[in-house]
Length: 97
Image (cartoon, rainbow, N blue to C red):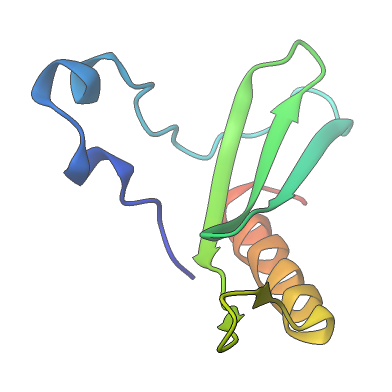
């Protein structure tokens, strides 16, 4: 399971303003919202409570193939497997998920 590396590339002032990583904490409610973003560079899943507060995040680098003409393609089975991977990683960070 990967973690986002954006902070390493950002100026110090931007890194200081980023939200701090959250510690896993017991949920007051069993209801949560999970968003999945399968972007070009990373696939990530983020868990939120019903008040909209971020509980945890997990990500892995995305893989894609660049063809000779410059077109970029992704394997749907690999993207799905990576989505399942980030959801499993998220489950390790969110108690009772």
